[in-house]
Amino acid sequence: MSTATLLAPSTAPSPEAPFGRLLTAMVTPFRADGAVDLDLAARLADHLVSNGSDGLVLCGTTGESPTLTWQEQHELFAAVKGAVGTRASLLAGSGSNCTAEAVEATGEAAALGADGALVVVPYYNKPPQEGLEAHFRAVAQAAPELPLMLYNIPGRTGCSLAPDTTARLLDQANVVGFKAASGTTEEVSRLRELCGNRLAIYSGDDALTLPMLAVGAVGVVSVASHLVGPRIRAMLLAHLSGDVAAALNEHQQLLPLCRALFCTTNPIPVKAALEISGWPVGAPRLPLLSADTDVRQRLSSILAALRPT
Figure 1 (cartoon, rainbow, N blue to C red):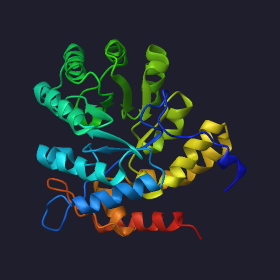
Figure 2 (figure 1 turned 135 degrees about the vertical axis):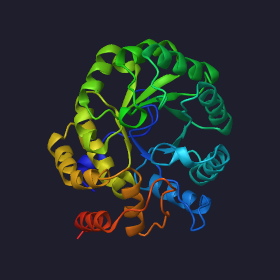
Figure 3 (figure 1 turned 120 degrees about the vertical axis):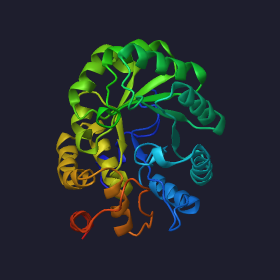
């Protein structure tokens, strides 16, 4: 280990990065019969934390929340919490396009002992900004002691939470984080302009993590960290230490994997990549399908190139 790494700042939770710097949006493993594999989920969670993750996000987009029952989500959270204890922040996906359901799920996340909740922009019904503000305000007030990370991913939800609306929500003390998955650094720049250090912005796109860090993001909610957690952590540490060249080198080397993991709908590629890497997490639930041969071959080549020689 180099002296630079030994002297690098910690990525643990801090006032600036309340959930840590590297959060993994964890897949949900399924058994061959389609049931959630709680034992494998616990082992995978332990592995991720042991390989650089400061926190885990359960039952988000990557965790296939649309096809999980609330009971399955609660059982998954309990299994992962039992495996990692206090070694990592645990965030529960509690968003919905029904405000009443999101309120109930966020309250349940707090009752289960989550360290935070990831609350996605309501999808499909395309509310105006006033409706989005009222929605998130209701969720925040339902669990005032639970830190919330708002999640903007317009490619999935069909509408976008505007930075101005986000800024107005900061009068809710538990609105502390924002997962930026709009595909542009401009969103981060505008949020920093309006919210300053009051809001911890996390990249929601692995390929844009370093550019987003450069304009004010504090970390990443990552998919690629299932496979290259230590290297993403090294990139974060290099950036935090001011070693621009080292951070850029890691960014460039990881880009092929980051792109491949989103060559088709997430989490199809990452589940295939985990299987290739010895983690039989099962196929996604319908209506998603397993990765085809071309995707698997592309991932196999990239993963082979990233393995230490």
